[in-house]
Length: 567
Image (tube, rainbow, N blue to C red; front, side, top):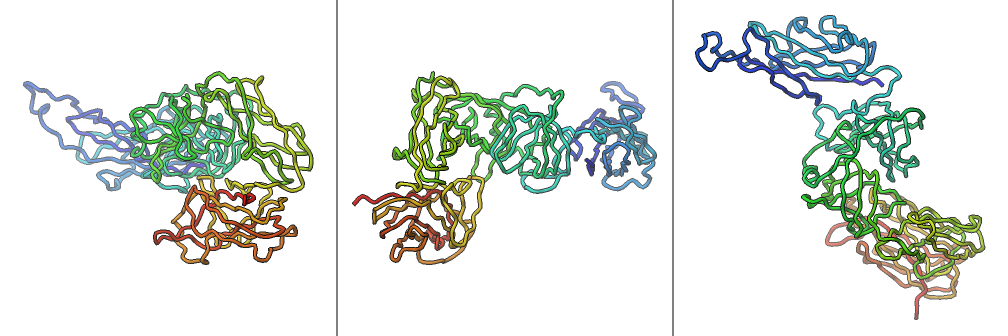
């Protein structure tokens, strides 16, 4: 990687004070020393020379541009009192280790790589005092990975934006946290998130080389486009987790950005609480919620259980006012498990080909660990995901087993039948993707936001249910939305918010089999009755934008439920 770098070195000196320290604009620590014939001030009987007050020298700043790579040149530009020094050759440079940079005037040729301390000295005109300062420069060796600690926010960045390109980097390290959107990689010098926009397929402690572009993401940096290669060989040694306190997290709201070199593994213990569907924790001394970003779909944090957790800083969410981390490990303090029981909503034990059925498991006692692995004894009939969602494949019967991850001797089974078509009731939950068996209809446009719920944002958006078998002529159809999103202020649309239609076995609309839903609220089912003969599918379309309290909203469709109406 070639790093286009600009560093500023600052120094202040006076005859009366020596050994002051400052910070470079790039965030590196610089030290300055006043070199004079006398470096002490007498407080008693002193000569006129030792008691005289020297003028305070102005600020010296040194910047360099170029590629911090072995074999490349760096050009230094010195400024004194905020103005360029006319004679740049009057500034002298040296480095430690000696010989790693060869200086010719204000040009330095990089001879060797690593952490190099560059020192600069300048004596202002008319002064006998020299101002010196130093900075550590990380020099890249061709073919060698970049230390993660060398990746930094651009100078002057406030750490509040996203998408600013920092540069291309090549790093090696261990996977130390996995999420639904990527993973953390740590090489012992620092840690950085690798965004993949998908469930992480790597495991903790996998050794990787990651190459790609790093961008700003609010208060942290992350790889946004990258390629990863699994490595063998000696792995880096990582430090143990540092205990995290509420006193520290209380400062995250105003702390600004954190460079990868300062993002280290943290640990805390807390009770899991729920805010709707979100799990969070509170650390003593901080009233704000602590949430973990991108919790993998196979991780279930149980409300009321105390967990020991480790993870990495991910900043403060200013929109919803919570602190955020990437989870590395978690361990709950559960009661001893004695039993498991599988269930389905409505005790349904059949499904259609290509449709889904969600299974849930209850642990005994109530505060025991409910984590299980799922398995189907015949995947030619039905499959089951790691989160317990069954999909019908072919007509037949199969058994699904849930086995405790804590005690594999404890398990439960359920026998399920797959039919050519589904029986009612059926439901579709729209989280991250349209579920199996459901199809998109109409003028389709959909986006998936960080909340994980499908956000419909085009008039005419709709879904069609799987085919089902029923003799009923009256069906109850309900719609649940996850949110009212006022960011897109689109007015009008048709008079109705949702239109519900009945279709026959060929998929054609049944005359008169139409109903409407005109009033909706977030996280509340809104229902209508659909009547008709020979209904085999139901289509639900969003036909207008919802206006409430004078504000036009687009809607976050969450679920559609279809059931026979009991008359």
